[in-house]
Image (spheres, rainbow, N blue to C red):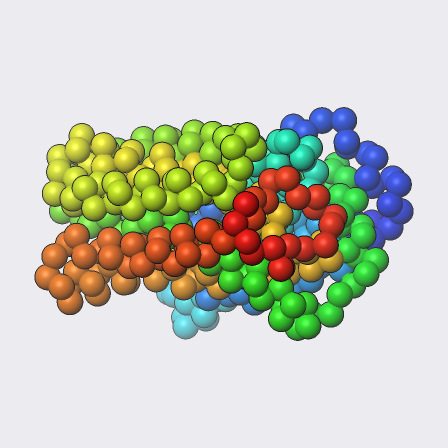
Length: 418
């Protein structure tokens, strides 16, 4: 009933919603951060899931465009929090038999479904509520929430293992982070209940653009999304998932897990820095520079991470964490700026989810396959280079985005260099 009431309120009076929290940008930034802390905390303590995200992006994206951005954020955090709590309380196979894994997979799909709308919905909300000169910085709170969630998930898993021991952690201790994460859900729920709908969201809700026709009309922006997102996300998962798994598997792997947590802190700092810098020098220009820089350092950084000591591993991660983190920090505002107002959440969420499933989600698998095919661990970098070249080809003809008015006609035809 609370969710239903939230959906009804979000489609109500424009005046009461838009003016209620315009006084400070801090609640807006916290709204972008808190939900993604929860979303990615959950993913960090129990693996990754991409299959349900495109479906969630269409369904929840339609909520964001047809009912309101705030309604989407409240609904998605409730879905994620509920699914996560149920995973923590789920009976084991010994109690309910085959129903246990079936229910577990179902709840993981609900989590993926939720992320499909939550992450990009947060990008849209924080960007639309920002002043024109601070969109990159404020929108980066969403990206920062992702990394903070990973850090908290990593710390929680380490604490459970350390305090309870391997046997107890495997038997029942793993449930503690899942049940405990409901705190984030409660905080996020009340925080988002106090936020106003954006003026752009109210305009979009009144127009109610058709779904599939809008996806086709937004095809250029969706293609540009691949150029903006693909390489940096593939490099991220290569650096903070694939390589970490390879180095933490042998004896002494705990040192690499600790180093990885420290590197994530550097990444966390780089994200708002990238958003802030993009507000000043332009997002397209900065992203091109960061893409080239990441491609230059990728192979030597990968060599350090695969073969080096924990200190060398850390240095290799930092070489990529800075440009990749800065690029991830600016992407939210840039994506919002290239999509039209009335279909922004749906088209952007769908394009982002598909891109992430094709690039970030397949990064560990592609890395392992390329290493086996070419006989060199450094071959894991090759597909990232491919995405980088495609990204530069798509970014180069684009015009700068940070000077655009968010309520204006989309930049579907704006493809000449600035």
